Image 1 (spheres, rainbow, N blue to C red):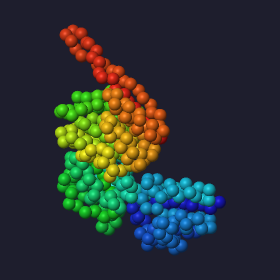
Image 2 (image 1 turned 90 degrees about the vertical axis):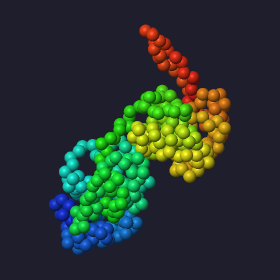
Image 3 (image 1 turned 135 degrees about the vertical axis):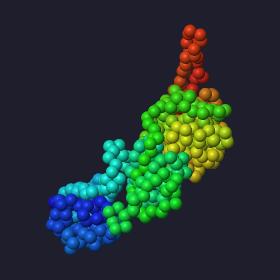
Image 4 (image 1 turned 120 degrees about the vertical axis):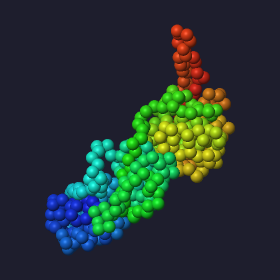
Length: 395
C-alpha cells in the first residue's frame, strides 16, 4: 500500500517544521503543496508540485508513488483539508498525520498567554457566527479569511453589543511583515487586516450558557413572557443543539429566545417580534444577560421569516391566526425542522394540530399544570398557573 504523509505547514515558515516532518519531506517521492509554500519547501525536496486546491483530490487519485507528502497550511488537526483527504483515501494509502507549530500555539506564546480554556473556531470559508463562542468563553481564538476577515469580525462583535471585549490580532505571523496589535474593540474598528490574520478575543464578562434563567432575570414591562418552567421544558422538547439556528416567533420580552441562546451556544437565535416595546425589551434583556447570539428581528410573521436563514428548530408562542402560513415558510426552508408550539387557548391548540396534520405529522402534546408557592403570613400557599400545552412535531 502507498504511504501518504499529510504534514501541517503551520504559518508556512519552514522553520516551524519538526525535524521528523523535514526528514519525511526530504525522503518523499513527491511533495504536493500550495504555491505559497512552494518556494520555501523546494530546498528540502526538488520534486515538489503546487496543484490548485480544487485539483488535490484528482492528483492523489492518479498518484502511483510509494511515499507521497501533502503539505497543508495551518494545523493538520484543526479545520484542515486533512480530514476530507483521510476519509476519501484511507483505502488507497497508509495515512499519517504530522503536525507542526500551529498559528494558535505561536500567537499565544507571543502574547505570553497560558490558558487551558481557549475556545478555538474557524471563521474562514464557514457560514457560522462568532457571537456565541465569544459570549460564552473567556478566550476565543479565531482563524479568519474569505468573507470573514478580521476587520469584519471585529465590527460584527462591536455592533452586536460586545463592545467591552479586548482583541488581539496577529497578521502574517512568523513572516517579515508580521503585525500584532491589540486593544479594546472600540479602538480596533478602523484597522484593516489581510486574510492571513488570527484573532484572540478576551471576554472577562463571559457567561455560562448552561445557566437556566429565572423570570426575575428579565425586564418585562407590559410584554407577555413565557414562564420559566415552560421555557425550560420547551428547550428540552425542541432538543436544541450547539450549532442550531433557532427561530422564536412572537418573542415578547425575548425570554425564550435568550434561554434558547445558551443551548445554541455556537449558533444563532432569531427573536421575531412586531411590537415596538417588546422589541426594545428583547434588545435590553439580551444585552443585560450578555447572550449576544440572539438576533432581534422587527416585523410580523410569516412575511418577516422569508429572508432569514433556514432554521433547525422553531418555537412559536401562539400565532394561531397565521400558524399554517408560518409552517409553510419554515418547512419550505427545511423540511426536517423541529417545531414546538406553546398554547394556552383552545384555538391555538387546534391551529397547531391542524398545521401539523397538513404535513402528516402526529405531534407530541403535553399539558403542563404547575403551581408556585406564595407566602401568606406564616404559611405558603400554592397558587396555580394557567395550564399550558406544549405541542412538538418533526418530519
